Length: 123
Image (tube, rainbow, N blue to C red; front, top):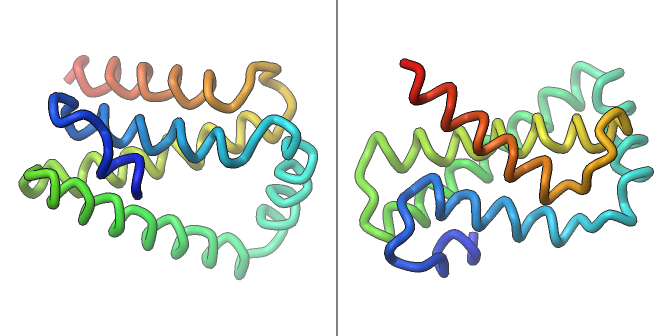
């Protein structure tokens, strides 16, 4: 949440969330792809773990939304941007861990945010 809070004041909500996603990708690091692949497999095989993972992402989204509100972002934009960011995080990690996408996680997340912008703009 620090990266979201520390994003330049000129950045909009989704850009601030993107800064947070970039920090998360850097923390995960490219060397953890195999571990992430194993983790995703275990989570996908267990309804209880899938539920727990979704609850964890909901907690992250709430914290990101709070950080956005502290930056002056009003509702519902703060919640929408935070929830969209968690969707980007989940989808990007799944793609990265699958091994089907050889790009590094930072690139996958950045491209996923760009795709989200296209979807949002297409109305």
